[in-house]
Amino acid sequence: MNEIVLIFGPGGGPRTAPAAERWTDWIDALRAQGITVRGAAPPSAGYIALHAPDLAAAAALLRRCPVIEQGGSVKVRPSWLLGALA
Image (cartoon, rainbow, N blue to C red; front, side):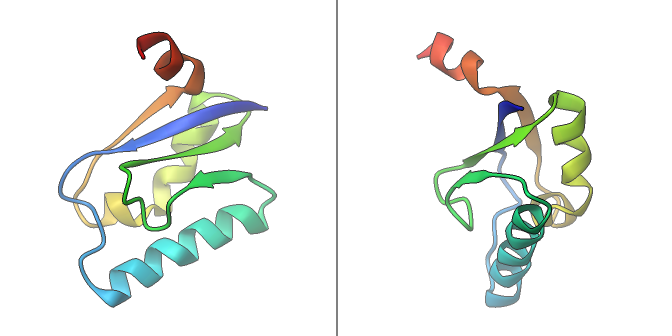
């Protein structure tokens, strides 16, 4: 498994209690599938890291992501890329 970083763009953050609950439910569903998730819930830091076989598998997990449902955007990147840019 590779560590993948999901970077959340503007416009999709939880603004209400129900939105924050949907975010927590989504993270819990990922963890129930055995996916390791690191980061804030909801993503106050603007990103989370998770383990997935590859970028395409990580992107597939976004189908039910509340950030996408609320009109936000998400970039999917390998975690090593962030270290290289730092």
